[in-house]
Length: 206
Image 1 (cartoon, one colour):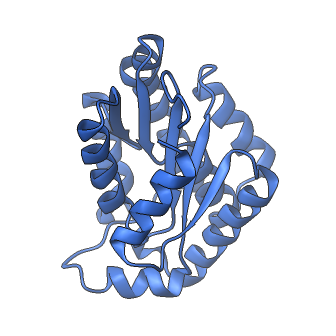
Image 2 (cartoon, rainbow, N blue to C red; image 1 turned 45 degrees about the vertical axis):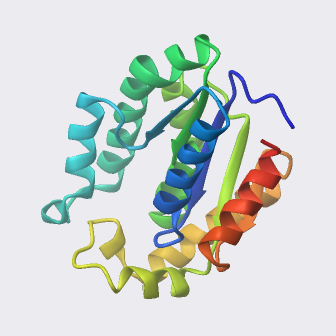
């Protein structure tokens, strides 16, 4: 077992990979095993950041400029870190976050085509020194993810970006997994829910 006290763990993946389900299972696992953990999400997590999230995901904001989108994510993150992530880590809690800077790089640079160095610099600045210890990347081909999304009654602005966009995002995550093999833990998300959960727990050694 790895001591995850005071560690920052992010959960990443493309649309439809099952992040919400796996995070809920992790939450139950931590509660059952007396792991003092905080669960949060991006964009969001605080009152201000959740309002920014509404703007980002609103399908009516389809004309949003790519730089506007990037800066909104960064603004949400700065508020999120100030109010939730940094204080929890300082108290020695384990923090699990649904998406963080890897998503920004994959979506805004690989997906939208913004300059990679620009995106990385903004991510670094808005993170205020917070460093990710481990990232669980739920690996699922976007085509399969879109099949899962198709059964939903509605989709948000990001999900509506189209398959080609999400294929580029997926390539971004794969590139990050290759670049940071010690931090990014790749988990096959095509398996059944219980198997994916078991593999996440095993990979994190919790």
